[in-house]
Image 1 (cartoon, helix red, strand yellow):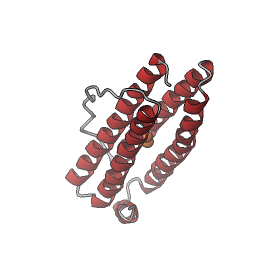
Image 2 (image 1 turned 180 degrees about the vertical axis):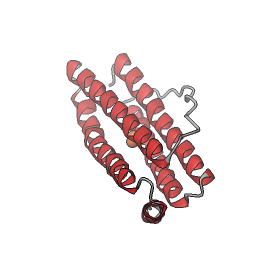
Image 3 (image 1 turned 90 degrees about the vertical axis):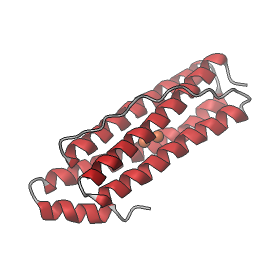
Length: 162
Ligand SMILES: [Fe+2]
Ligand SMILES: [Fe+2]
């Protein structure tokens, strides 16, 4: 069974994942407002993935006979000055989440909670992908700077994400 401290930390991570989902949905809304539907599609898929992360944690807490308790989700940013600024924000956010996952692993190890540690390893690996995906788009947007053609090509490319 989960310790009360671990249960609380996992519930806080559920909230952090739902906040991630909310940020990406806000980013999708901003891209829609800029007529960049491909970027918006990418962000909507990301929103679903983050909700999936929250549900994975939800399921684990229940499986360990813990109690899931939901808290208010912080209001996300709404305005960005460019597509590059959006993805720089996404990368920064993923780095923050990676730090949180690291803290959870440290706590699981400290408590000798092997099941939670094993469960969290999926998130450790997922964060490597998440950071790499955001960073790759940041790099492409830097190359596309000042070229509307390149930006639209990237919009088309990212719109294929399912
Ligand atoms: Fe996540
Ligand atoms: Fe993420």
